[in-house]
Amino acid sequence: MQSLSFNNNDKMPILGLGTWKADPGGVGKAVQEAVRIGYRHIDCAAIYGNEAEIGKALEEVMQTGLVKRDELWITSKLWNNAHAREEVSIALKKTLADLRLDYLDLYLIHWPVATRPEVIFPRKADDFFSLAEMPLNETWAGMEDCVENGLTKHIGVSNFSIKKIEELNSAKIRPEVNQIELHPYLQQEEMLNYCKKHNIYLTAYSPLGSGDRPEAMKAANEPSLLENSTVVNIAQAHGCKAAQVLLKWAIQRGTSVIPKSTNPDRLAENLDAANLKLSNQEMADLAKLERGFRYVNGEFWTMEGSPYTLTELWG
Image 1 (tube, rainbow, N blue to C red):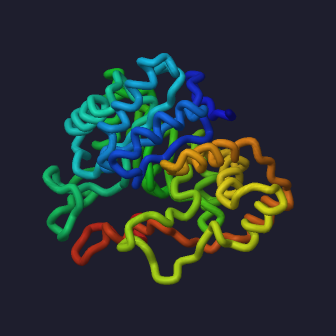
Image 2: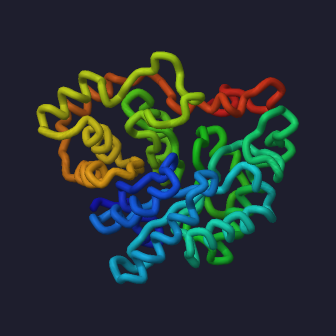
């Protein structure tokens, strides 16, 4: 499996298992099966509500000798209601307890959005802190504390625009990863080039279009990646699945990618996508699919009176 190397020689497998929307009762089995067939990169988050089940699965695969801790790359994310500096390590310690781990490989700020400590999902404007009230630099200082205290080896961000990354101007440790929505309908070339220049790795979420996300998050008549004729034709030429083409597209751009599945057959197919080779012409054909379309557009942070707007969020 190809990997991305960090300055300290740690290596993040370029293809991992996403766990957003993985159902309770199924995610643990999926993690165990994924590790059994060769996955070594598991992407988690506190807000997904399944870290305790994932932790039990991780403990079991390590206790049985199937894999050692230092052979795994485990990522998790800080939720919006723990952005105060002193709350960051508390949140990470809760994640570590749930995952039954002593440390994370990577911890990310989930969104550049802050809510009050008692608020999980905001329902009104007063549930938010603005970034003037809760600056990203303060949250980032808490992330740096976690590195210094051995709670995580690496830190990064998620859903950050270039402008938001540059707001971390007091950082002692620069962000090493930005996890964002990436696929042929949202190729984010400017971000890709920026991150390459500044030694930041990109991780692609929703690489297949996130068709199983909640209906409330879906737009009417949104385009399907898996049914796109260009993607389908390339898949037919290779005798593979459309999903595999989309995953290899991400890998060949040098970005890590974290498709979610709990189906054993699809877990294996997704992993096998790393062995596919797309031609220059096929990559060029996929590049023509850009349409600036977000499946996860962030509108849920922009209710009336909110300090957050889509323009402010994405730049």
